[in-house]
Image (cartoon, rainbow, N blue to C red):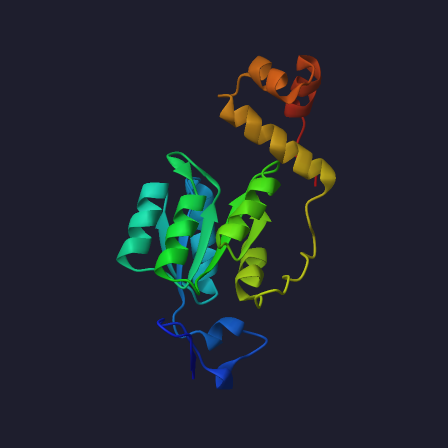
Length: 199
């Protein structure tokens, strides 16, 4: 058995299995912090089916409280939450359990901030919407090793569309305000919003 000093994260080298790397971890606790309820519910189910013991929080306050009560071995944390920044949860997790593996989920346009998150102690970051396979792969990657690239990554058109949709929602679905913030003509934005999401 391998144990990091001062921690309870134990890895049994005899059970390291390439097909199921999670089997090597005795503590499979996972904290998901995201205020998008449908997304966090789907992700929680998917991660439970992979063997994680999942707890969900929907705010920075709830996330920090969960970390204080029982620091998880793994965490998936949205960068932007209604009551603050997910970096606060990552920073607290790293104080309480330095060996924990935390992944930050970030919307398009937050990559620079996500790099800061990694410097603060996040294990890695993924652009939203990330799926359970990408998240699991990232959590299981060894330090310094990149997770395998996704089989079907989002196209550039889809990333652009997701970004526009996010800004549109943040502007309370106000087309004029969204167009102003995106430095885009109002009619162009309306045409994009009327179309289906690109693949």
